[in-house]
Length: 138
Image (cartoon, rainbow, N blue to C red; front, side):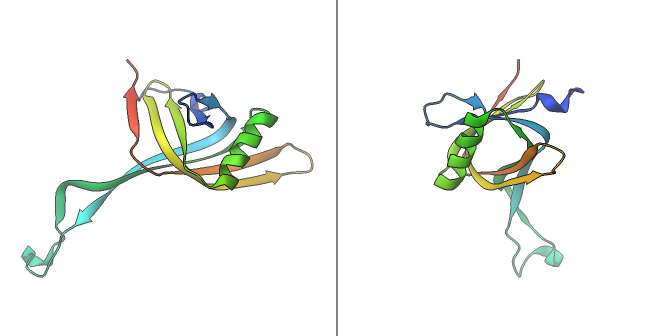
């Protein structure tokens, strides 16, 4: 991945489930993690009791965390509604110079913070909740 501005990573929400995504927040810091947890098939007959993994199999998941400012009042309300509904929603994560990750996520944390001399900020955490698609940039 080439060098790029961190502010260019975008987070979008498909609030209505129609496939129409809308940017919901300006994230000042963000972290996207893609993981593949291997399937352990070690048994009593494994050579030297070394761990054995099932080839080509893993439990994959993605998580996103970030903090920043909501784009506007309507965006804040959409994210808050998604949290309180407890439903899985489709989210889109745009990674400039890399591609787009899209699919169902569970909004697992929504936190608010503020300093009396500054604006109210939020922190958000999303956990994948199904198959994700990745579309590379051409």
